[in-house]
Amino acid sequence: MADGTPDLSGMWGGGGGGRPVEEDEKGNVTDIFPSRRCGPTQVDCGDYTNQSVDQEFTGRNDPSRPLYRPEHWDRVIDLDMNTNREDPIFTCQPQGITRQGPPAKIVQTAAEIIFFYGGGEDYRIVSIDGRAHDPARARDVTYFGHSVGRWEGETLVIDSVGFNDLTWLARGGYFHSDKLRVVERLRRDGNVLHYQAIAEDPEVLLEPWALTPRQLRLNTNPRAFIPEGEPCRDYDSQNMVTQIRH
Image (cartoon, rainbow, N blue to C red):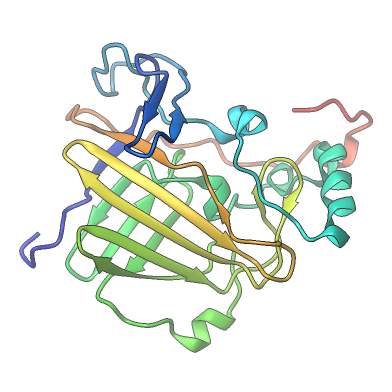
């Protein structure tokens, strides 16, 4: 960018297939799961895949899970056992930051950064000029909260507060309170975007929850786009008679 900060703009996805694991300098290993193959409007990814890890699919095997205070575990278990009735996404509610994960597309200017997510329905506009949270907006609880960003070297740090308690941190009944705070870190290394997030909720969690880091590849296909998603219609929730898991 003209102000010297990294440009995170682009379509981001991939991160699977040919490399089953990645190991950092401390010996920490990150699994990279394969998924669907590339389509004509997606990156020519060779032995990689066209999308990042689908947390809804792999979450059961993710070693990083939120640790709750003892008095809240019964609720987590009950929500998990009754997922088909209790999961908020079944009634067309947004997933929230931690469950949504990294964006599919980023548009960046000097003053703000815009995240677009799969399906084209959800987006976030985040100020990145170093401003603090607006107290009034931070109290106006929403699904994605109030977010502000700042640069720490070449890493963009986004701090989000002001959430409602209607989303889950992840599949599995991992609820949160309106005291939730999420800190995301994004760093670009060539055509790779590193994404990390930490969720803090002292009201229900014993300690901050560090989500499994994600690595996304830049989609250089000029025809790439985010397809329009089908509108979410809640027409089955009142008719469910089984608890078959999704």
